[in-house]
Length: 358
Image (tube, rainbow, N blue to C red):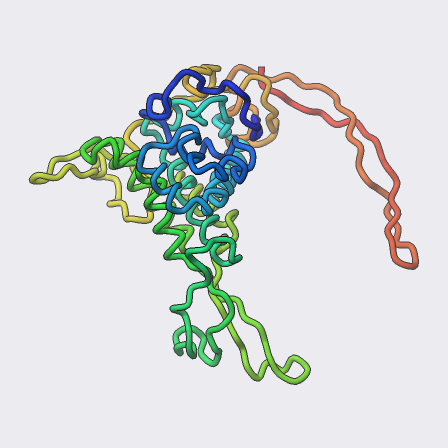
């Protein structure tokens, strides 16, 4: 599986930003491949030099230059989470060189494209919100609207205090930055409608919060509790979006008066909500290598001989069969606790069977 790589000189040389990203996925994802942006953005014209940004994103960058490192962190989160969620599937979220991070997979209107857009928008909202809470950004901080004593429906009996995550700022920033490449193409395109819907669905998942509290009182008696709201770990966001990927609704465009809407392709499909993912076309099988489309195929991938799921050799190898080899594995074993205070282990070597797709 391809890992995040630093930008190499010459990527995209000779092409304008808009030419390289036209029709591509969110340009914010390309920032995951960049080294730290701080040095670049010290230059007043640094935003113009960031590859892949459309004109309106450059304007957002100029106005909120301090937030761009958070945008980069959000892009990294999105790519890493995508690779985690799809590590056992035929398409495993491998990345390409160049501005189209996932190649044509991201622009074909498939379920995979829906997930990429949702996780990208969620990643930026998540990272910018965290940067606010950590005091890294000048124009935002903790959510000061959450104050006073909790309502009965929220558990009752505690004081809102601490630093609640400023979700509204992170979501608004993600809308302004991530959605702009789509809006610049015009709202009439079915693909644009799909991408904007999935962007917002990703943000809605990232906007879920939980309450964390701290007790105050003699010997931890918890006479008084102070609580604040925090976002869930990004892994939980990824888990929810993966479930929504599995249950995504296939749609097609329908003209309703002067508006074009996306409606379920079949009456057998349930109506989708603002929290669901939608897609326009069936996915390819991802079995065979096609670098131009961002498909690496499954030849050489490790598979599980006994699993009936997608990571099993039968499905992952697309019926081509698999090879088996013996590999030596080194593990800690015979561990003993030594007073005081360490654990000492031996190293054990043994052979295991590993299977890989032909």
